[in-house]
Length: 320
Image (cartoon, rainbow, N blue to C red; front, top):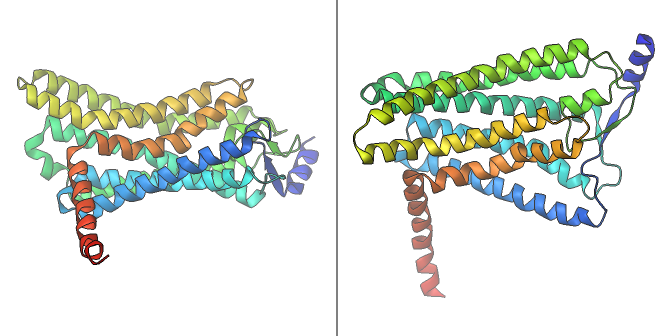
């Protein structure tokens, strides 16, 4: 049996991404919806990075992390969306074995990096609210750079381990992946290998990746809440909650969708696909909106950039 699995594994050269099981006439509607969301992801995250890089007032640790968050959102949505858009028009819906490996590797890399960046942002808010006088000393440029580099490093290590472990499985049951993209759980369903060790190692990896980030976020906000409740100034409380609400909103959407997807039974694959869209496309689309709508500094910087552009067009308009 092991020899047959190994033989069949060596014969796999491509997979088929099944996607949503809907009537063909709905593919156009889904294509347009995906295209609109992806365009908003590109516009929002590129816009956010542009605002942060061009406005000197946003040269702070919080916006340094936010700029990297936008970059990660842009990358991991781009790993998924273009191929999904092509598959709406493709009859074969195939992806090469190498393409599938690359897609899983990059997706895990950026999604894990995002989790660690969100934990770093929670720590940043904790220092800013609980130790404001020491903020500039504790959140130095060196520490911020180390936290960001560490986030990418953890993402890379996790991705190497998860991807190499997934593609040592034998795929002899089917080539059809019942999902929108190459992911570990759908690939397990089409494997004929013994999955016990694989699932135990995957669970261990998820535990050492997700638990530390969640613990940092929860503990940081416990201290923040305690400090805010001791603050007598209503204005101070409002400012603290306003600063943290954007971050909490992003964390809730991302982790809520991830937990919903991976806790959904295999008997409901369509629910898993919808949940996966929440953190592959919807979250990257919402992040810039949440931070720009809830953040006065970003709104002022954006207004300043738009004002300059309008002013630069005035001479042209007068000539016309």
